[in-house]
Image (cartoon, rainbow, N blue to C red; front, side, top):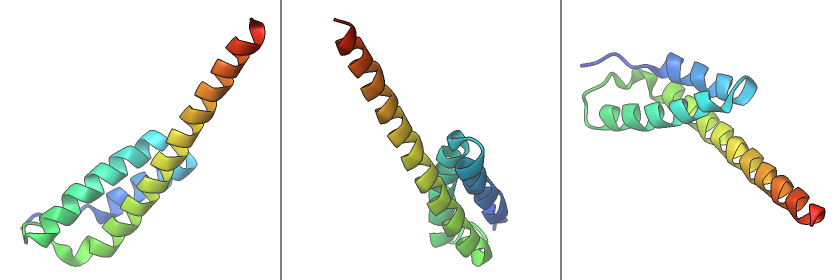
Length: 84
């Protein structure tokens, strides 16, 4: 049975919220993979709660990133329209 990466995923999720949202994407993807491995019995399930928390932080960080990109696109488009 593989050891869990719950602490790493939680750290990535927190870094995604505080430092750089790209860590959030990694936390979300790694969390999904590890939770699936835990469900089928290939990974130590003792880190399930840490993994879930990190994945949720990663989801929030990713949502913030998407929101920032949408705002940026709207601003760029609106500035382009105002110039004409």
